[in-house]
Length: 333
Image (cartoon, rainbow, N blue to C red):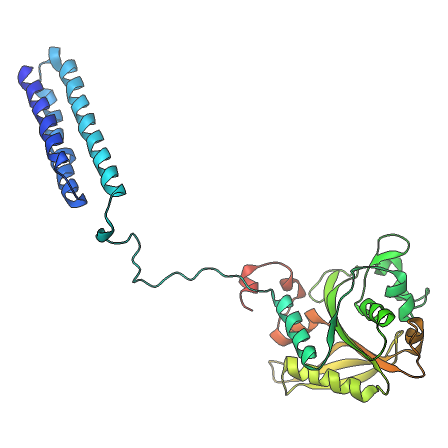
């Protein structure tokens, strides 16, 4: 028993003495293998416990375990101290010579990108940007736009009414009225924003979408100005080879009115005219409603659906993709 205890004590002392001389991680690893490795001295002493007489084995096992734990604890402390005090000359924790990881940087949504592009195009044409509230009254949303009370567009089932007179706007034409109320001609503005209609959501419809509208009021304004402006915008946004056409139509706030179509080349080689939006000369009743003399001034206006433009330009088959907030989709643009 005495010989075994002396051997354990000697092992403990030698282990601590050698550990005190360790100065780097390489030497520490050599020390660990020597004393704590699978074939180390501590394991050798523990294996000898089976040779100790049974009557003294509990005391010998206790002493051996205490020494084993003390050596292990001394190693853990030395490792922690060595790790925290590693000099800079040992090299950086990160290899700066390797290519860096590109951070995930966000970007504007495709709708926002398109709105900015549209405003930039019209800005180069000399248009100012106008804005208006999304909660509107019937005067700005319907009455001033020459839409009578019996018109189907004013049905409560086709609008989001807040109360008897307030509603969430169904068109950005309300901004045109607000501009004409406060600004004398000449007026040359473009407006974008969200509009709301209780449509069933599908691949081409949504209860919320975006519009861009233009308004030009001055002396001598005619349809030639309108057609030239819309055609030049379409070429700037869709490409110089795009073709446009104007079909006679009807809107309460313009007279005469027209639908704007674009000729698209389909993947199968065929072509198709697709409706883009509406336009026309501002109705004299609208000018009178905002106290602009229709005998002196004329004007034109147009309205285009932004989501429709995006889908046509980028070949997006489903409107809902623009609003589902899928990173796999938005990262493409």
